[in-house]
Image (tube, each protein chain N blue to C red):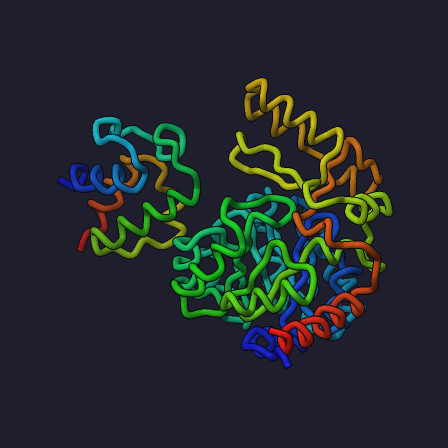
Length: 76
Length: 309
């Protein structure tokens, strides 16, 4: 379910269609985000999933899969 | 007059800090700015750690006032440089080209103030959360690597989103710009291009002359396709970039063309084939002054401007 919820957030933040978002999509390479878009996305994920993602973890989140795994492993 | 929280935070007389420009912002320039009551900053760019170590050694001999070092976070030497700055207990660090979050807590332990340069509200909020002491909010008017938003639009938006002090940068070179920045809610300014055209700056004479000669439309942007756009004074190099970009050349080729060009302009004075990075405010700069004159003129003009409002 994390993936479904995340897809909505990504679609809204990056202004892409939900069906363009795959597990293996890279935010910057496939979904045309720049580094500042990724910062906004990470912050939206923090809000939606009630998480605190430290910067050293955030910089490892490059694909949808990375985000899903991080969220699943750290959800309260 | 014009004493702000930035003066207290950084222990300086005037809330004016000098931009950490690669190659240009050496210990000579930084020491002169610090001695004149502002905050001088050594720019690391892509320089290796031994070069920066020497610069820190030199500046400590030239001034007893606080100074800073700007770290370019995309530098291949970033971790080593951060270790050096920690060892040397450098009073202030400014950062560019990314998110310095993971380094901040360590510097807090030794009282080093960390001021990230931010080009957006989201990054500003994030930096506040991880403990940045203040933010440098830089508009696209600036020289060198730039963001998208203007100083006029970005500064008040960041000021409204965070509770830490904001320093405005990009397009500021005189007392009018200084007062305008304070009016937008900033507590200080960062100035780059104006300090290039000073006696103490080691940039090649040709580089300084190119800025003095520049008019309002001469500071152009290249490299948008690479995702790392750069503002510099129009010359053979910028024309070549623009032609290649129009032809749809791939970003690797364009990025490669940029390598070594700033050094070539700053040190060798090749201002046709080199990159003369400078801001939109270049057209306003008409003479070489000392750093002390630059700062005092800004403050004196700012006083008059404030009274005349």
